[in-house]
Length: 76
Image (cartoon, rainbow, N blue to C red; front, side, top):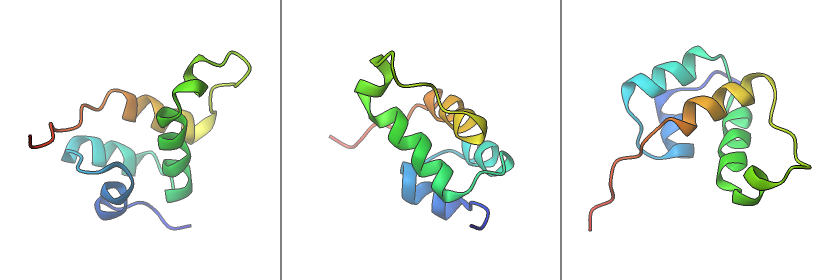
């Protein structure tokens, strides 16, 4: 898989700032790893399930980066 671009990051996460996009690209992760990190964060049960281990490697790095991200508020 090829390296991530701002376009592919936005397709997975929605709008993100340049700083976060740069950090994600710099991680060297690919799109599959970004999808996996987002899925792990989106699955509330996974965060509370003691039997499920925290991701490793680049996926873990992405989870940490994305978890600090505040998405822009949606238009009401």
